[in-house]
Image (cartoon, rainbow, N blue to C red; front, side, top):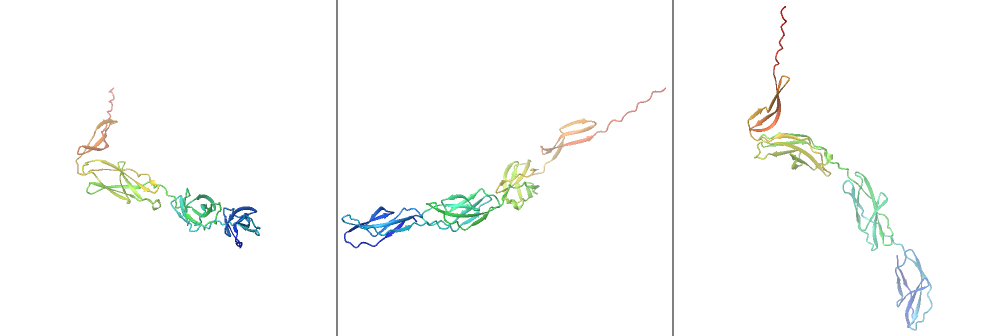
Length: 309
């Protein structure tokens, strides 16, 4: 597209030294053969040439009849093999076959008919998109002369639905093992639409395990006699960890211990005896409290005698 090739009949004289090449009436170059390639021309431009033979005495003969030619406009070929694949909620990945022309400078990327970007490679990641939405793409090659080739066949893809953080785990239940050395937690599984990957188990505010099930068995420390443990469970998906469940607690009593209730403080209000902060003791370890109330009968009222007259 930027070159014109010239040929002519060689002069038969034995003393021909070279030929003068003229472009648009101006001496351009010389050649000792009867061919010449004029390069570096403008595209879509017409040029006119003449040629004259020069002998060994530097005498130039008559100019040939003019010959004209127009450089062509070869645009890049159409891009082929365009593929669009959704990559999550907000991204679509594009790939296509690289154009083989040596003068390709870059590719124009079109989304839904509008130019959105350029790239020098044969791939592109379009991000920041809207979840659960279909987008259509075309790609065109552009050469070093800023000429754009025809756009590729269209390729479409739909971003995935938006994933929200998991909802709160519900109906957490706790049961003591028959062996008394641990507990079993159970809860309602989250909805399938939340795409839960696993659940986190917390004991006393510390993460102790994860599970893909909706039950978990926790074995107590064998050296632990009595301890009040509090449990919570949360669900996890691609968006992160959801809100933790309500707390649920249970005493880690691993052996039978004597039960001794006692009252810490007693006082009387309007004829009733109250025990405040009453403690329940297992083997000497206080673990809970309650109020004990006992009514005391009131004293009967005495009638005053009327004086005798």
